[in-house]
Length: 175
Length: 265
Image 1 (spheres, rainbow over the protein chains, first blue to last red):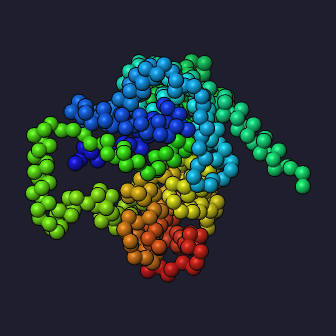
Image 2 (cartoon, chains in turn purple, yellow):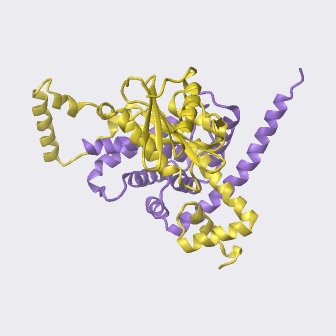
Image 3 (cartoon, rainbow over the protein chains, first blue to last red):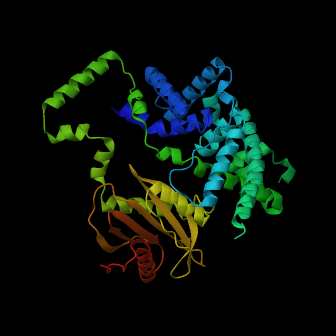
């Protein structure tokens, strides 16, 4: 049963990638994509070479599935930015605000940028692996990464400042 | 040596992600020393990466829906599958045998049986050895409020991280580490004025474990003091005199248990 365990271990990471692709507020749709990916991977299991890391192989299956599905539904998934559900555990207000605004900013990035950001920055894939996963040249990975980070820096700096300011205004309410 | 302007944005990315060759990496580091704007940008990008990882990590802890678990069944070729079914039936016939129970026990449970204070101690000492010498990123999260919130959420219990501990030890930050299945471990790092670092490593034990009093294990370069309380293991590691470590561990014990520390053995 070793191969099943290998696959099960990857599910949380697949769910995270799916949410970055589909949208953080659409957990169910994202899980549908995970399910499709798992089924495809199981059917093609004999094609996985165990010298290649499993996670990038699964990511590339998911990426291709998502691109195909989106082509089929002609961009319907890109319509609106979803609301991000509140974290279940109460957290410090400031840390919570930071995380929410960051997730939102990531979702405002175009898909090719946020994908690269997730693979390299969050999942820690090497450039070569990321390029292989997405089927693009390494140079493209780097330039997308650079644009994604620059855009994100710009918008998080703006947003955090705005959020802090609004917090202060609330805090200064008249007695 | 190349000029600052020579560092392309691609190279800056490669530097941040540890994909730059040694020579160019040194160029970037030298350039950053001369150019505060570049140094600031590098810091901002590093912090961004840490915050991204933090913001996108809670989903990893969510319970996996059963429908996904059901979909994860890699197909083998038919003969292999038939052979496995036959083997499973054969084993199943040996009802009650320990081997069968072992073979069919869920993985987490199987590993839980292997958990023991020694394993906990090994992990704690390994984590100390790996992260304290790291000059660049000894910790994942530095800001105390973010650290406490994050660790508390991931560990499923309040994790205190006092700013200061006895003998001038100040909090640098902390990180989350794999411990046992369903029991992630946390590592907090402290540093004194001489730059000596100590770590606090804690996690839930994977199976009920009897409390132990403070125990001291001396190694070549590190002394570890550990105790188990309420099925949680705590280990303090550092290259400090035993007496100082003992003071520190008593302070920690009070902080986590809210009572007087047990006597040293």
